[in-house]
Image 1 (cartoon, rainbow, N blue to C red):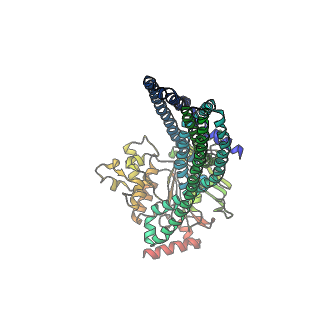
Image 2 (image 1 turned 60 degrees about the vertical axis):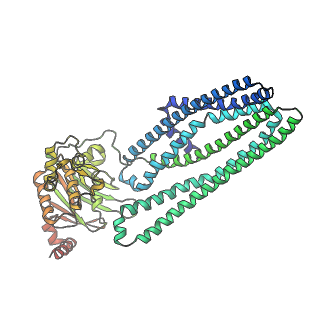
Image 3 (image 1 turned 90 degrees about the vertical axis):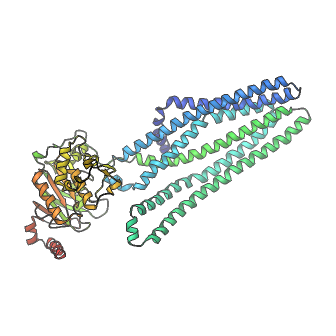
Amino acid sequence: MKKNKKNLTFKTAPYLKKYTGLVILGPLFKALEALSEIFSPLIMSYIIDVGIKNNDKPYIYKMAIIILVINILGMVFAVLGQKCAAITSEGMGRDIRNDIFKHVNTFSHAELDKYNTTTILNRTINDVYHIQEGTSQILRNVMRIPFLFIGSLIMALFIDLKLSLIFLVVSPILIFTVLFFIKKLHPLLNEGKVRLDKTSQVTRENLSGVRVVRAFNKQNFETQRFTEANSSLLDNNLRQGYLGAVLHPTIYLIVNLAIIAVIYFGGIQINVGGVSQGNLLAFINYFSQIAMALIAFTRIITILTRITASKERINELMETKNSIVSPENPVYLDLNANKGTKIEFKNVSFSYGNIKNALSDLSFVANPGDTIGVIGGTGSGKSSIINLIPRFYDATKGQVLINDINVKKYNVENLRSGIGIVPQNPMLFSGTIRENLTWRNPDATDQDLIKALKIAQAYDFVKEYPDFLDHKVNRGGSNFSGGQKQRLTIARALVKNPPIIILDDSTSALDFTTDAKLRKSIKTNLTSTTFIVSQRTNSLKNTDKIIVLKSGDVVDIGTHEELLERCELYQEIHNSQNKKEV
């Protein structure tokens, strides 16, 4: 556990180096602010014991001006200290969020399977917020509290040593109280973050799937599910609140009882002439400042506890390494599709970590320019095949070869830049059509984009927009139909004629005529090696080879005609679809 804490410090400390000057100046300004608070009670005691006692108005005015100047300086130092802390903490929070975002974007699919979207969002936003707020509090108090505490203690001892013994009695009680509550609070903070993840996840699922929820009339069920998660979070937050609600009044009670003792014994000292009225008032102020410093210290301990819990979650995320990395001396894929790209699977087996393989002993060859169809039922392993080509996952056994070279030997970024992938669920990003189409090639000309749109059968509807390629795309492409989104995502993948094209059931929303035109256009205009995953046999009948899968096993490989003659599963799929069409 101690080792983990050292790692956490190492993880966050570098972010402060960028703000070294502010990290030094901020606490220094707050220390000067503390000095102004320390000298004020002493000057006030002089006003009482000298100015008021002797009715010396000029002395009173002079000392009042000194207090005013000291307090103004204290306010200036406080503002400067606050500004230094704010700039440092906000900048640090920005830098940590940037690094988390960059790091998460390096994850392969295997790492993304481990962390759901909700927990990544909460760690990036909520946990980083706790760290940056805690850093701000620490920078504002790391020098102020010790200066205020030690300075006030010295001044109190200087005024009256006997009365200061009260503080020596109170201090252990305060420290024990704080440690007791912190011990109770830490596990609640960790548990609370887990419950926040759960509540956020339920919320996100319902917002993204609201139409499905309504279609199945499950609003009451989902409301109950959210209520349970939210109530669990509320229960945790209330328990945290209860501890805080008890901690601070307990501390104030101890401090006020100590002040009562100071006033009582101080009054006795005044009667016997052991201390003056001004000194007693100053001593009470110093004692209050010592108490406030201790209370502020308890808050810092609480903040550190919260920061530690957040650091642990962020550290876990940042220490997760990408399992898919480029080798030390990588091979680079020739991105010129005209030269042809051969893809071969040699005795490939793959598992997502389960006992059962998603693919078992798969072997086939796709020659340069071939179009390979992949068909099978749900869970048969269709998507697993195409995920292994760009190394979203690595094969558990066997080899995936591109141009007779294992994909593990390629530079990952170069490999993926040579593959045009269209996922099952079409995803467009907010912006314009042009901005979405130039993802593969930012330097693509309008002619390149128009060519891709024509091949993808999207040009006819895009040209109708007055602003054409600059037509606005809403978040997720919500202002386009399902078929339009699919054709735009296909066009995005086809820009620059990539050596390899993968269409993962990406024509499901297209009618048969448009689907046929799309496949013919790709075959005619492009020289890429193409993989088409589809549930329709008619979408695959003109491919060079079709792989038929069932439960991760290859049932047969052949052309459409060959499979209709000898593959019973393919015949069943084809006949069932043709009956539906009739």
